[in-house]
Amino acid sequence: MTDLSAPVRLHDGVSMPRIGYGTYKVGDDEAQEAVEAALATGYRLLDTAEMYGNEVGVGRAVAASGVPREEVFLTTKLWNDHHGADAARAALETSLERLGTDYLDLYLIHWPSPKQDLYVETFAALLKAKEEGLIRSAGVSNFLPEHLERVHEGTGEWPTVNQVELHPYFNQAGLRAWQSERAIATESWGPLGQRTGSVLDERAVTAAAQAHGKSPGQVVIRWHLQNGCIVIPKSAKASRIAENFDILDFALTDAEMTAIDGLETGKRQGIDPGGTER
Image (cartoon, rainbow, N blue to C red; front, side):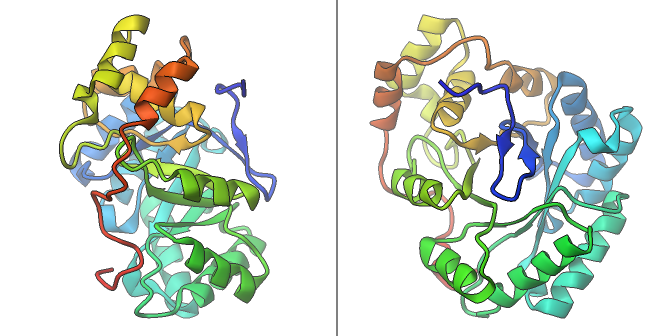
């Protein structure tokens, strides 16, 4: 089995931690305390976005944590109203200022926003920023294969990472396999699938939790890792932040993985990236 404590090596040679701290819906006023708790726990991958409105708090936490900047893998995302070369560059510079850093480890296009049809140009702007040392790696979020193909056709490069909705109710097995063939890392957002229903109450999850003396949340996070995904669970509670990180001292059996895979419904809980809502 892959050493899940080791980072993922992206196709551009950058090493990225497999488990990170997600900050969606963590307000800017609470972000510093929460992110400092995550860094103290041992997280080294931090995920934020312009749209989350908490980049200032995240940046303050990194600065105050005592953890050297080069040991923190910092990710943020470009929002839809900044597609296009010039707008993307301006958005990047603004995010760097808010985060209080002179470079990002990973910069993602948050949504393809196909109605604008500017995501190829926008990704080319990210590649230029990488050449200039403003970002170490260029990726995307919520892209479908059709969007990724166009990016590759237009720039000659595949994104290093595609961050997508992924949880036991919507496990994206086909997309994961497709991306693996092209060395695109899959990163899971909404990993616990709690927007509707609760993965954590499913028998396949609770039985595994009981068998290993772990919480249902820890079981689901471990499921992501054993499926080869990078995962970014979120919580504002220090105890839960620590619990979500404590997932390396057990392994799910093949039967347990199969049972959790069987929760697949084929239905998204979030927005369809192929639509025009974003």
